[in-house]
Structure formats: C-alpha cells, structure tokens
Image (tube, rainbow, N blue to C red; front, top):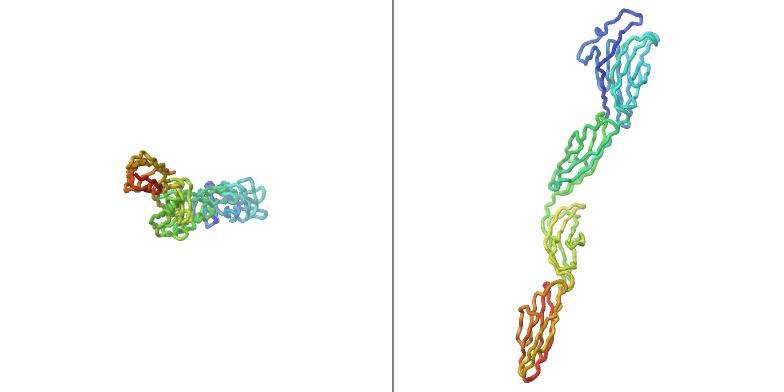
Length: 412
C-alpha cells in the first residue's frame, strides 16, 4: 500500500527573479494567480495524487515519493521548471541532510525518517543565482515493516462464544494506528487498540473461523496474519450414567455405563472415580475399588479435548474382601440327667467393615436373631442319642457367610 505523507514547510523563501538580460526587478506577488488552491505567504501548494507542486512566481518545484513499506524503498523524485534558463544555467538542489544534486530532475533517498528542508536554486552560472525556493518534506524511513501477531483467550466461561483477541503486533519504525479484524463470520471490526473482544454466533456444532488481523502503520504500511479459532458448539446433552455391581461379595467390580442423549460423534467419556487414581476413559467401563466407601463419581464428556458435558452421583462400593467369615465355638456348660446346656461363641470376622447381624439356629426349633455373638441353649435328652446341626449366619457389608457344626446329645 502506498501512501504519500508530506510535511510542507510553511515558510517558502523566494528571492528576486532576474532575467538573463538583467532587466528590471519583477514583483513576484503579481505573478501568483489566486484561485482555489492553497496559498501560503505568496506560495501556491497543490497536491494531485502522489505529486506535490510548489509554485512561486514562475518557479515551479514538484516532488513525489515512493512507498516506504517493505520491500519497497522510499525514493523522492524532484522536478524543477518554469524558468527560461540562459546558456550555462542549471537547477541546484539541497536536500537538507547535507546532500546536493544538480538537474531539472533528480532523485534522493533519506537514510532516516524525519522532516527536511529542500532548497531549489535557479542558477545562471556558479556565481549568479536567479531564484531560490525552499520547502519542507517528510521522510518516512526505509523499508517500514509492521508484523501482525495476535493471540486468543476464552476467558468468559459463562459465554464460550465471547473471545478475547490481543494483538502483539510490532513495527520497526513509526506506529501502528489501526487494527482491523475480519472475524470470518461475515463481520469485521476496526480499532485503534490491539485488545478487542468478539462474540461469535451460537451454533449446535463446533465451528472454526479464519480470523484475520490486518495492521496499518502511520506510514500507510500493512501486514496481516490469520489464525484458526474454533468456537465450541452449544450441545443440548442431558442424562446421567448407571452402575451395575458384579460379584459384589467375592470380587466386586462395578460397570459404569453412560445414559446421555444428544452426544456428538467422536466424543470421549472420561471418568473420575474419586479414589485418587486419576481419570480413566471409555464407555462402558469396568472399575474395581480397593476400599469400601461412598464415592462421588464424575462422568465428563469431551470433544476435541474440550469439556462439553459433566454429571456426577454417589456410588457405593464394598471394596476388596467385603464378605464376613462366619466362625463359632461350642462349649458344654453343664450336663444333667435329662438335659444338657451348651454355649456358642462367635469368632466371626469381616476385613473392611463391621458385622451387622448374628442369626442363630440351634437345630432344636430354637432360633435367635437379636445380635448376640455369645448365646446359650438347652437340649433335652432322649432315650437314644441325637445329633443337632447348629448354624450361624453373619452379615456385613451387604454380604453374608454361614458356619455349621453338629453336636450330639447323649441318651438320658
């Protein structure tokens, strides 16, 4: 992009204009034609596209400059006209940076940006100056090169369509004065600052937009860059998950199965079983807990690494070795001619919990479920010896175990 930026020197210096035949002095003000163009202290300055013309009397100096934007190199072209030069006469230019040149047309490049006073002298010969005009030019520098860079940030969790864009663009000289964002959704935005935000349309599925940033410098130089920005879809997922306990009292494993609706293809199910082992993926998924507890299990659905749904519920696990072990000892308390009395003492254990109940059956029609770990009962003697099966059922952790023993009552 080419921009011609010119600073005109308001003080134009004009000396007396002499003819080659040394005629009388000419009134320069009378030579200036007053019309619609800019007039400053008798000098007329006109700009037509990329060419500036400075006219005072019949002395005319024109100049233009090429673009400073990389890869171009800024070059000024100066042209003098309007004066009938005598034999041996010439135009002499002083560019204000210590350099000079001769000729009706000449070019010059400034090594650094800045404002410079250019002087055109109309010379009859080396010792006789016919006219002198000074004007200002503004050099923008060589190969101005802006570099467009920006980053994105989703810093509004409550509105994932609202995205922050932060320009880190730079320039080797001059200033960036404009940031133009084309959002890729049919809209664009122009700002004088690099930090802007944009709300993209809400759509059902993930949508990727090619966001383009074009930066403009005060010298008219531009650069652009494009970043692909994916805006998450607004998925209407609902539902939870179900659990199924397998071999609960021997080798418990729990099967987790998602029951969510409207899940997009390609989604990943991630599970946090809340026992410190870290996330697992899959659906359905089988998991084994080590310790009995109520666990707050979290199911997360992700798409392209992004969370699109989450749900949780408490799941009870019996853990490893949940089943109690039923054991008891029997002891003859006393022996009378017609009866015997026996005691029974439970030695049952449970590794990871407590025993919930003791259920006794003594084989003689008597039972007891009143949570006695130690209990006694009497047996009547008959004419012949008789055997009885004593049974203990212990429960705990939702599991049960049974122990049996046989005692023999002698005859009376």
